[in-house]
Image (cartoon, rainbow, N blue to C red; front, side, top):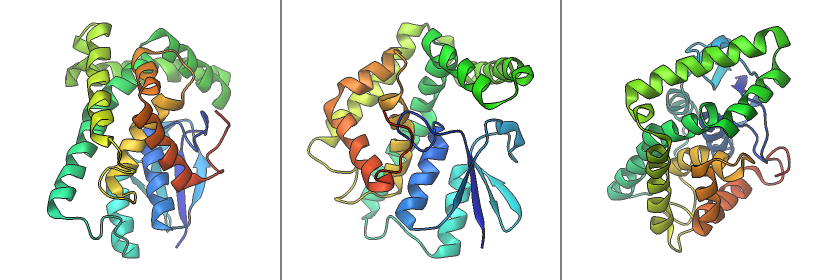
Length: 240
């Protein structure tokens, strides 16, 4: 079996800047499944028009959750083995909170906050031909804008969006308390999702409101440090 994982480029001390790609890479590392990471800046090349996707035995497959379920079945890997039904339910809730709600805040700060927009435009310019960088940025920004408006977050003013993102992080900060990981003393699959969504904001250099708040929370930052070290060690990517 040959597994290739297509992600956005590494940066910010992380092996990829894509939150769902980071989740997938963290899961693969914890599962001990070998893979080849392929940097691809244009998500439209993927089967679902989103990043990440994989090529497995010549087949292209998108959506991190679908990919993980497939690889779990193929390899007989279960990162959640030994967790109680209550722990599994709690992990599901945390995963949905950050993948479905907090993710909207992350996308808004990346594409619509001035600091995030500046970084994204420069990133595109460094990864794709100049003639494509500008239209690709505006195409993706328009796509994200429609999605974020339809889902509700972009209907709010910036200060309300920031308040909503900070509330998710504050809940995580309180919940972590003295825990090493979300559900037990070892990382489980919900940790890969929460880490994937939170770590980019903790480590990116742009001064956006929710990212600044994430960096100010000691338990959240320490949790991301533990996950990064546990999953990637010194191979995480560019230095912070």
